Amino acid sequence: MSAPITAAILYDLVQCPTRVARDLVDDPAGRDEISPFVKMLWERGALYEREVIERGEFPFLDLSQAEAGDKERLTLEAMRRGEPLIYGGRICADDLVGMPDLLRRRGAGYIPIDIKSGRGDEGGGDDDSDGKPKLHYAVQLALYVDVLERLGLSAGRDGVILDVRGEEVPYDFTEARGARKADTLWDAYQAHLAPARAIAAGTVSPIGALASACKLCHWYSTCSKALRDADDLTLIPFLGRTVRDAMAPTIPTVADLAACDPDGFIVKGKTPFKGVGADRLKTFHARARLLTEPGARAYLTQPLRLPVSNVEFFFDIEVDPLRDFTYLHGIVERRGGDSNAERFFGYFTDDESPAAERAAFAQSVAHLTSVPEATIWYYSKYERTIYRKLQARYPDVCSAGDIDILFDPARAVDLYFDVVMKATEWPTNDHSIKTLARHLGFRWRDTDPSGAASIEWFDRWVRERNPAIKARILDYNEDDCRATRVLLDGIRGLAE
Image (cartoon, rainbow, N blue to C red; front, side, top):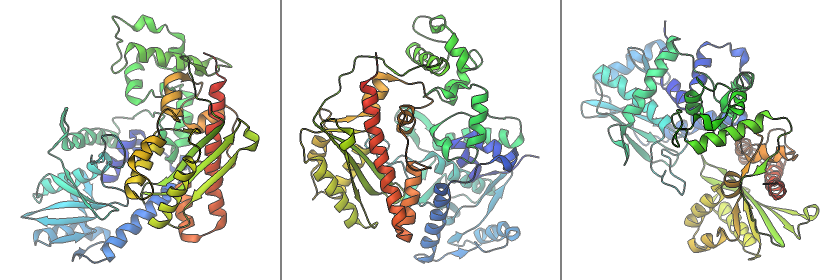
């Protein structure tokens, strides 16, 4: 008998179908311990939901404490008598089970509302993602709408995310998802519902795939071992699940790809693998060789000229995306190329107030602009994105033009996009700063160094004010900055 399809299953399916399958059928003893960061997300989500409800800004029928066996019946009865707002209900139809945070009456039917402790859309970047719905939220809301439709109690194909900003973010499942995309969010929901049912029925057993999100999953150890034992193609950087599935019937392993002649698969500039062009296939082949050849070394793929200056700033920030709050700006300053005499400056917010965030931002901007001829090194465009947001939030600190000058490519270099991605190859499974710096021999002082862990530490610092936690955050950020310096020096030493 198939397991029921829940909103949680669809949420996880967006991230990884293998996780859904393992959760349903694997021995729980094979799970890793839940990370403190994930626990923090759960706790923060529950706390924010409680805060919203306890504010009492709107009257509602509270079914959250009803017995599990009675909740579905009580929810149906409440909707049929027209309760304006229902909290903590349960709705079911066929194999679908939904527990929306709120059900709001509109006309003769209801729309679902979920309370989220994060932002309700994909906003916050400097690309075109602002305002787009989050797919993992969308499939949850869509399941509730589907159940309501089957019950004859839907007010339409739309729902709402009540997010951490207190904003109601609408999700319209009938609108096209983009100017060049004809499919709707409802189509996306249906596309995830079908494999969820197949996995629940046991007719499909999805193969794992290595991705950046894996490290926070409780199946990480089990899955990563299985992938390494299978020499899975997703061990190759940026070769994801979809490409793996297209290539695997012909080239099943990393070793097979390394041993093949990629030109043999290229006809008139095209390959038989969907989504893989000739150049991309050759890149994957080169990376496969790096992973399989003993003693393989990183190398440059093209000539590289990096700026040289007497003063260098290695720059990294720490941000809590759920609070939308930047709590640390770290700068390692090196002068005259002497790494033994470099100094760390950490501009930390002792609380989570706007005044503290503004002060740390102002201190960091002052430091980064104190030596106009200095080169600024950072890893990925995240710092630039966040500084544009901070400037808009605190325009008295600096102007938008000042941020453009600060991140002018003539003096500020994104080592990830402008150097690592464009001009290097590495014998590693990914190109994260942690992986590449470790490959070059650098070691973090912390036993669990990650941006996610830092966010959880800051969450505890805000609540506990333990000096050891603050020191841990500062040490971690300092090591990130020094790792950027180690990576730069390592790249300078690569052969073409």
